[in-house]
Each structure stands twice: as C-alpha cells, then as structure tokens.
Amino acid sequence: QYEQQSFSSKTDWRVRAISATNLHLRTHHIYVNSEDVRERGYTYVLPKNILSKFICVADLRTQIAGYLYGVSPPDNAHVKEVRCIVLVPQVGNHQTVTLPTMLPEHDYLEEMEPLGWIHSQPNELPQLAHQDVILHAGIMAENESWD
Image (tube, rainbow, N blue to C red; front, side, top):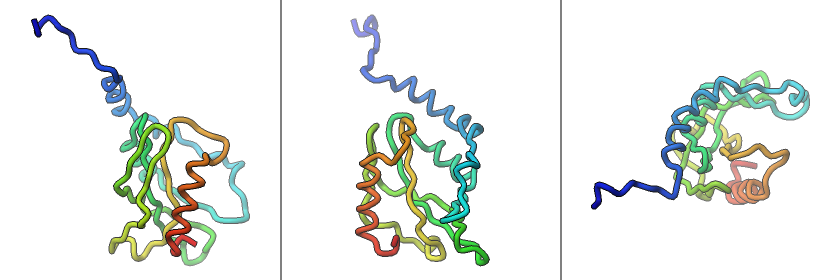
C-alpha cells in the first residue's frame, strides 16, 4: 500500500534547492551605475568577493542580514572599504529579518569600524522599506558606536 503512494509536498523545496545552487551565477552580473556616485558624502567600497559570498549563502525566499565592518584609508576619511560581513544569529522570513540588539564583538573587529548592515530581499525597492528604517533606528539607538 505505501509503495503505491506518491510523495507530495506543500512547498517547492526541490525547486528552491536547485535555484539556490545557481546563486553564484548571479554574481557575474553585478554592476554599479556610475551616475549614482556623488562627490559629497561617503563612498563605500564593497569587494566583489565579499558580496559574492553573501549572495551565495543567501536563500531565495528567506531574508538574511549581516553587519558591515571596514576601514578608511589613512589619506581619505570619506572612503569606507568594507572588509567583512558578520553574519550573526538571526530570524528571517520572506518579508523581514530580525537581528539581535547587541553588536558582535571579536578580536578581528577591533581594528575596524561598523559601517552599516546589508540584507537580502526578494525584490528591489526604490526606497528603504519601513521595516528597514525601524531596524536601522533600533541599531542606532542601542549602539553608540554606530553614531
């Protein structure tokens, strides 16, 4: 009797698993629009290998997030070079990601300054989502080192 039944799942886990294995191919098509670069303010340099690794560990439906840490070159304080993305324990779903209120502490991070945070999302928005504004405001309020 059991041999005659077919397996059925309410989720498309097989399609998601196959799609996730192809995420590294998306990293070949990342471009920065030079019209968005301004002379005023800060310029952030995100190495492609760090961004590629973040994309490869991401999921298509579950948002993930990480804290950006980096340094400024001694000759230009307005350039911020991202050196690492710290992935902390988190809870994510297709709409949002929840991060802990405490920032990570490690010997590797002592020489670096917190630069911000990054997260994956299912679609591109023209402005910050309200969940992102709330999360960022909470991080800024809880951590004086981010000011």
